[in-house]
Length: 80
Image 1 (cartoon, rainbow, N blue to C red):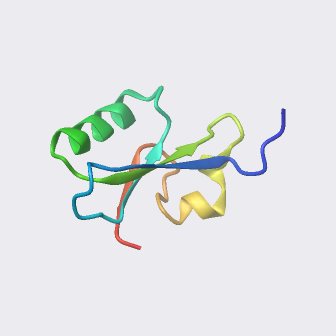
Image 2 (image 1 turned 180 degrees about the vertical axis):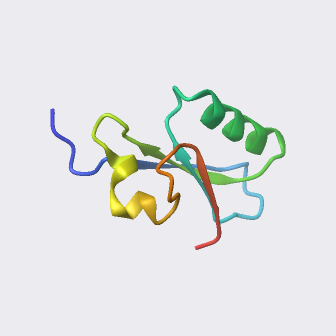
């Protein structure tokens, strides 16, 4: 099954509070990614989650390396 993109986005909201422009990039199988998402959720912070497909090598593509130059997950982007 082929995918058109190696990164998939999901928006998580906190019940209509002010929308943040934070984006968490990662893979939920990663403990650090899970902990970062959990911490944001516990703080009531709204964030978008974008899945980074490590098997497809998305973490080594120029688009992701512009976000995290080491090509590791997780990465948290605040703002545009």
